[in-house]
Length: 633
Image (cartoon, rainbow, N blue to C red; front, side):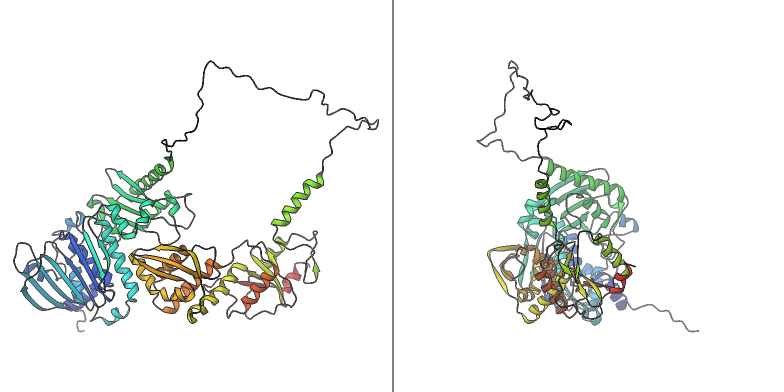
């Protein structure tokens, strides 16, 4: 039998390894910028074209490399960071495995110009697909200048699965922000298609956070600081009133490295328990400093998942530090003692005497005294209590708060009286027997039939096969979704101008995604104007959503689109229409008149798919007539 196992060529092995390290243009920028930081660069400039698909350039003023180092740096597992296995547990640098440059060179066309400060001439190296094409001496500035072109040019399957430019640019900005947040002592700049997105000078950490996410965040942050022999924790957490369902800025860093850690995230959120609504998130920027021997950063190719030796103890320290910060924020009252109108504080004088209070009562009152006009049987004089008047007020209030129709209302030619058994028990029993039987086709609603609202949530109506229950909130979502989709596709959305425009402030990573959905927002009725610097003015909103917060509505639609990560335009339109429909739909508990219920039911059955909401939830169910009759046997 012939041998079938053989060694892969280095070029193929490098491409396989590149699939783990280099996933998208953002991965290239992350690796190159981290290498620049390890080279003690003080100024780092990043330039991208077409979201990094066409070209990526990273320029730094770090140490630079000699001719030999420049050539050797593109070999796999060539590194200056470690020399033996023990060094893995004493890491103080960002990179260490020596895979980044080799992986990039395997799937892109690379040009490197580099010069150390001690030499007059630098080195220019050109590599394409792991093959060195040229190497020569050139005149260049101190540091390194990497130019990456045509990423995945030799792996068309990988290039085909890259997302739209707006999505890839958002990923680049997210990686850039993570690095900039942990290195406020380094100046950064970022350009996309010759347009400046970031220009971050050296600054304290709080100013760096505001430069990235906006100055409004300055009023929302609370400082945390704790120093123990096990861990040092510093950073900021947001005030409870700033909680939101989506779009919170949540960052963990350990020893200058960004990480994801769901376990520590639960520690932070537990500190906010009972302070924020369930399901909402809070922003935080938390930095850990621990002994490198107590963590393992080598468990994931991207080095974002880190294992701690004393996770449970650090969890308790983190939770206590956040609670302490929140306690200081809540416990310190805001009192201004410099105001002119000071409250009068009474002075206690020991010589003054106080008189005891006097009790006034009618000494002639006798509850058992016989009335003059009473019979000899000893009837007593009692004041007349108008019980009817007291109960009359309760009856009036009950009628005002009760969403059920009047008892005399005719429904299915049957009079409903006060002696009818409790309807809640019957409906629950019948519903369980019906087992949520869904209508496969459009039901035939009896003409002239009045609808009944139950518990401020369901609409009950008679159909030929029995009794139908319709969820009013989901039904309205179904109706509005179809309406908004038609407006988006036909660009017929009607914008209603606002008297005072609302200002929407977004970080650069979110602003890039907003530009990609701006046409769809305009089609549904939003009128947004770009004010520059990540600020947008909301000048108009779709008609019919009055009373909703337009800033939060646009932000929710934006974050939903970012979470889904869809590039198909129709799917983005579905996300916008569904988010808007959920926000504008009638809520549970809203009392509807019969005319409103008739209109909602008619509009529901005019939809192509009335049985389900756009996200697959049941809108209506039918209880068959024979199941109802079985209850009375």
